[in-house]
Image (cartoon, rainbow, N blue to C red; front, top):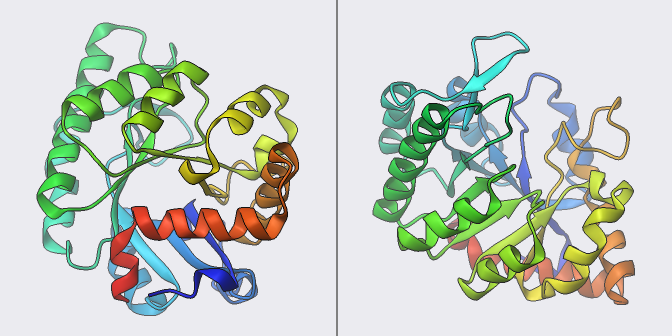
Length: 263
């Protein structure tokens, strides 16, 4: 098993995003002992073979897609057919199915058609995760309640709701289902998240950076090294030591992403 007492686990980051040079991994290796890496389609095998001792590759179809440009749109059900084949082909290397979920932000999902399309892709990936006995790492912007209720209906037992921004009552529904919640460095400048972090039991919280996005400064590239900032902030809110939060959240990651222990 991983030496969780010696470092952090970044449960949600995009190491293969084009903003990152390879040197970032070596710089961050002294801070984080493990990364749950959300791989871009064609980087999947490269990342695993290059950094298998440090990175846990994950793959899934995001609810928002782009055609290579900056603009994003709601995912279409036909998109999943090509991309989900990667999950089956490389399933033994995967440690989670992600980043999947729902994004009902009005400009991305203005009608019921977009919401229904996202739901079809989401449910199919939940089924794949159950078949492969893998946890899911979930996006739930403007859709926290329906995301959690859908996972419960589908019998999902292992889930991380990343950068969670739903209501506290909805979070408690997730806690009762055994789900985990994670927060990136950007939470340190968002007072609206204080109540969530304070009330969600530490035993259901993990750490993330969502690198290269959601850093302290939205104009600067975020990196996994900043995981310590989240840890310190959560410790401050809960009145605990940084060491206690680091230890418990790393243990939580090990409980959720059980296959990282096989590396």
